[in-house]
Image (cartoon, rainbow over all chains, first blue to last red; front, side, top):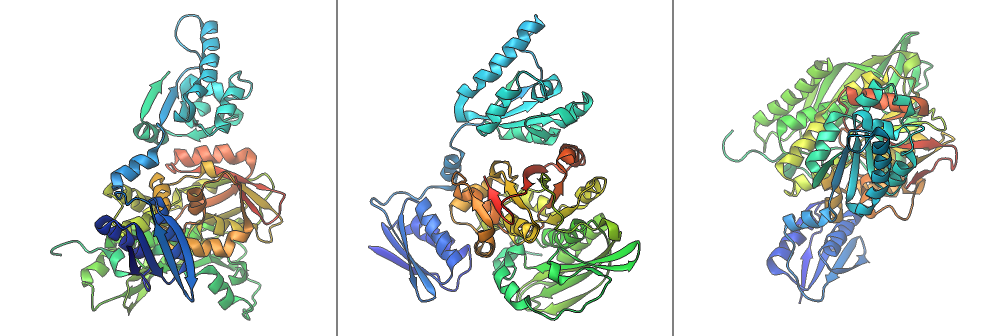
Amino acid sequence: MTVEINCRGQACPAPVMQVRDILAVENPAAIAVLVDNEAASENVSRFLTHQGFQVSVEAMGNDFKVSGGRDAACEVMKDTELAALAGGVKKILVVIGTDRLGHGDDGLGAGLMLNFLKTLKEMGPDLWRLVMVNNGVKLAVQGAESLPVLQELAAVGVSILVCGTCLNHFHLLDRKEVGEITNMLDIVTGMQVADSVINI
Amino acid sequence: MTGEPIRLTQTVKGAGCAAKLAPGDLDRALCGLDLPVDDNLLVGLERADDAGVYRVSDDLALVQTLDFFPPMVDDPYAFGRIAAANALSDIYAMGGTPKTAMNIVAFPAKTMDISVLRAVIEGGLATMREAGVVLVGGHTIDDPELKYGLSVTGYVHPAKILTKKQLRTGDKLILTKPLGTGIVCTAIKAGLAGTEVTERVIGNMATLNRVTAEVMADFSLNACTDITGFGLLGHLAEMVVDSGHGMRIDSATLPHYPEALEWAAMGLIPAGAYNNKKFRGNFVTFVESVVQTRRDLCFDPQTSGGLLIAVAAGEADSLLFALKAGGVAAATIIGEVVAEPQEMILVA
C-alpha cells in the first residue's frame, strides 16, 4: 500500500524529517510525497534514494509528487549505522618524523625509507594521510629522491601534510614540492579522527 | 528562564545566509536601476562587491556594509555572535578595518521572551568588542520572526582596497574556513546534529575574519571576497565574471565539515543551495568524477564563511604558513586562477 503525505507549504528540512518519521513508524514499501518547491522535491528524492527506494518525480502544476518504492520493506537505518556507512574505508595516518628508516647505517636507512614510501600504496584506499614532521619534511622538498613517490600518492588522493614550523626551521619553505603546509592543531585533529596512527 | 531552553531554529522558516533572496530574483529587481554617480564612490552597487567604498580624502575611504538574517542556531547568544561576525566580515574582505556598528533587529515581542533579545544583543556586543568596534545605535521593529545583524562602517586606504576583481593568471586561491555550514545548520534544525558538531560549527561561524585580514595585509594581494550566502561557487562566479580569467578548483582539497557530506546524501540541503546552483551553475563545469555531495558543498550557502584570497603563486605557501601560525587552522589552497577558459570555473 502506498502511503501518501502532503508536505506543501513546508520549508526544508521539514519534508525530509516528516518522511523520515513515517518510514520509521510505518515502514511502507511505497510512498508518495507532495511538495511545492524544487528544493524539497530534490531533498525528499535524495532521502528516499538513500533509504533504498527507487524514486521518480512528477511535476504537477506548481507542485511536485515524489514517488518511491522498494521491493522488500527494510528497516530504516539508525543514525549510528548511517555514520558507520559513511565511514566506509579505514583511515590510516602515518607520521613520518625522519628521512631514514630505522637506526644504524644512514645510507641503508635512506634506501629503506624510499622503499617504505613506494610500498605504502599497497594499503590501498585505507591510506588516508601522511604527516611529515622534523627531518621527515626533507622527503617532500625539491631534489628529494622520494619526491616522485609522494607526488604519486598525492595524485591518487592521499592527503600529505607537511609541518610548516619544520620547513621554516630548515629554511625549506619555498622548496616544498608536494603536500599541504600544516600546523600542530591539524596534526592532532588528524590523529584523533584517524582509525589508526603509525609512527615512523 | 524556566523549562526547556528555547530552540530559535524552530521559530523561523529560513536560516542564516541560506535565507537570502534568491540571487536571480535580486538581479531582476536591481538591473537597470538609475544609480547616482559620484567620483568618490570607489566601489558601488554596480560592482556587486562585499561592501561599498567612498573616498573621503586621498588617504582615507569609508567602507560600509549591512547584513542581517534569521537564526541558524538555537542559542540566542551564539546567534548574536555569529550575526555580528558575519556582518563584520564584509569589511575585512575589502581590506578594511571596521570601526562602528549599528544593530538591526526584528523581534517577535508577542511570542518570545525579551530575555532572548538581550542575549542576542549581548552576543553581538561580545563579537564587536573582540573586533575593536563600537556600537553606536540601532533600530528594532516588531516582526513575526527574529532577525539580527549589523550595519558596519570601517575605513581603508584607497590604494589598499581589495575587490573581487583583478585576478592574475597563476594566482593561488586560499579559503580560510570549512565549507558546509548551510547543510550542518539544516541538520541542527532537523534535530540530527550532535552537541560536538553544533559547537564546532558555532565556533567557526562566530570566529571573526580579523586575523586573516591582518595576516594578509602584509602580502601583495589584489583580490579577496568572503564566502557567504551564494556559496563557494556563487562567490567565485562573481570573481570570474568580466575578469578575463577562469578558475580551477580541486574539490579534494576543500576544507569542510565531514558530517556535511553525509547529511547532503540524506537530503538535508538548504533551499538556498539549489537557488545558487540554478543561478550560477552555468559558470561551472564539474569533472565527471566529482561526487554529488562534493558538488553540493560547493553551492552550499555559508553563514559567516571564510575569506577567499587570490595570492601570487610564489607567496601562497608563505601566506598559508602565516595564516596557520596565526591560528587560522582551516586555511587551504583550493585551486588557482587560469587564463582559459575565461569566465568559467572548472571543478576537478
